Amino acid sequence: MPKSEAQTQDIRPLHILFLNLMPKKIETETHFLRILSNSPMQIELELLHIKEHESKNTPREHIKSFYRKFSEVKDHKYDGLIITGAPLGQIAFEDVSYWPQLQEIMTWSKTNVTSTMYICWAALAAAWHFYGIKKYVLTEKKFGVFMHQIHQPHHPILRGADDQFWAPHSRYGAISVEDIKQHPELELIADSEEAGPYLFASRDQRSFFVLGHAEYDPVNLKAEYERDISAGIDTQIPENYFPDNDPTRQPMVRWRSHGNLIFSNWLNYFVYQKTPFKRQNIGTVYE
Figure (cartoon, rainbow, N blue to C red):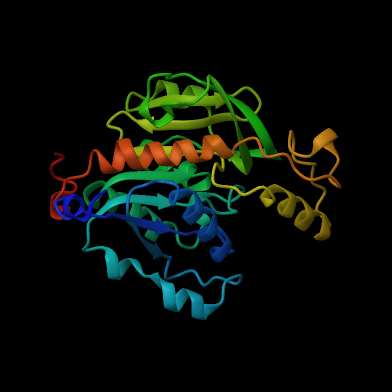
């Protein structure tokens, strides 16, 4: 594009807030930054953490340098919000130390964020907080890469997707497909016969719930498996991940194209195309 044309482009950056609940925050940041950077849109990412929760797996200096507290951002408006998962699937929401502040942030997003994406445990938490959909604890971790079917083939969040796609799961928490289908404010977009619900959304298309990990890099599940084995945990080999189910072999990546697609579609159709040009109008009007 010539400089003269570029100077007339009236397009502002998208401001995305990223609430990182994972223990290894730097690793999680990297996963999401890589997948979000595949979009041609200009993105400014702000990192947010829960002030009551001190990370044991991330240097305090890193948190202090790059993360903000909710009190520092709550008076601002954001085009998008991503809330990550957390290894809390076996714990009741009310027993999580930072549950009250997470509830406050989720409620705040309704008036201060154009579109929110909840990942894995955060999707379970938001389904309970907003819609009263119960979380079930699995007797065995849902662990591996699973095939999924699309129920809403014309939904823009999966525009360009194949009829079936692979995606990783790693969780002890689950919700019922029927509970999603029966709720009038929600629509089930994709699920798996083996892993259950994967992607659902609010009908106003401002909230998306992803129960898997499209953002995972090739060795995430391998690292989780080896960590559990080293800790003496009787864990199963992640399904459909190692060739011939042999953990000594290099994992097979089946989900990269889907991961790039779902995040680029979210940024395009539900953030960029929905958010007001004037950020102060977010939550009140959509141009």
